[in-house]
Image (cartoon, rainbow, N blue to C red):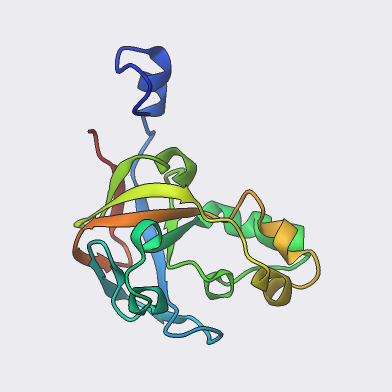
Amino acid sequence: MATLSPDSELYRLMSQFPRGGRVDWIGLRPARDVAMESVASVEAVAGQGLVGDRYMKASGSGKRGITLIQAEHLPAIAALAGRDAVPPALLRRNVVVAGIPLIALKGRKFRIGDVLVEGTDSCDPCSRMEAALGPGGYNAMRGHGGLCARILESGSLRVGDGVVAVDD
């Protein structure tokens, strides 16, 4: 949005949200190739990541301090993978968010509870989705992988926290 004029109609449209979102689930990846751990809350450290997540241990995650996925996409992923449901831990994202379109937060600052983050890039699926979801799992996730974000201000994230865009 930085290249759009604040006076433009597109800027105005891209800055409006029908409502805020909320955190439905939080998970940590304590190490490579181990199951995700579901938690009720976690500390987010600016410029590094989530305490207890393997990416924080890997020298700070920068643009990928936290990964988010849209709750409303889970049924779509399940349908495309030929499953009845997909538990969030299977998809290896840190936070499941409902009620606000994550793609609209790419390139924007937003708050998750008291933590300030910035959406940096799409969180595309990796080859592990083939094993997690079965044949075609990678393609079932394409376009539904979520968002990577950089943690700008430290704080606590909790299930039930609000997710709101922040005006620059």
